[in-house]
Amino acid sequence: MNGVLVLDTGALIALSRRSPKVWELLDRAQRSRADVLVPAGALVESLRGGPRDALINQLLNQPHTQVTVHDEERARRAGRLLDSARTSDAIDALVVAEALRYDEVTVATSDPDDIADLIGIHDVTVVKV
Image (cartoon, rainbow, N blue to C red; front, side, top):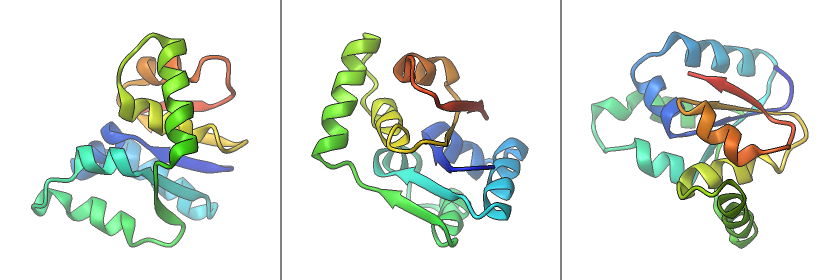
C-alpha cells in the first residue's frame, strides 16, 4: 500500500469485530510503513469504553498510527464537501476532508457510496470493509 490509510467509523467498528478485510488493510499498511490515520470524530463514534474497544486501542498504540484532529481548515472543507454532495453526515465529511490532504490515500469504510459522494472528482481509493 502506498500513501496513507484513513479509517472511518465503520472500519473501526469492523476492526473491533475482527474483520479479515480490515486486518488485511492494516497488515499491508504496516508492511509498507504507510501512515494509518484515525479522524477524531470516527474515534468518537466507535469507542464505548468497554472491552469491545481493545483492538481499536491496540491499533492506536501502533507505530505510524495517529488520531487526527479536526481543525478549522478541515471543518471548513468538510462543510463545503457536505454542500457539494448534498448530504449531512459531518463525520464522513471530516474523514474525507482528512483524506484529501494527501496525494496517495485510501479510505476504508463500510459506506463506500456515501464516501464516494463526498469525494466527488478527487483521486481517492475507497475500500469497502
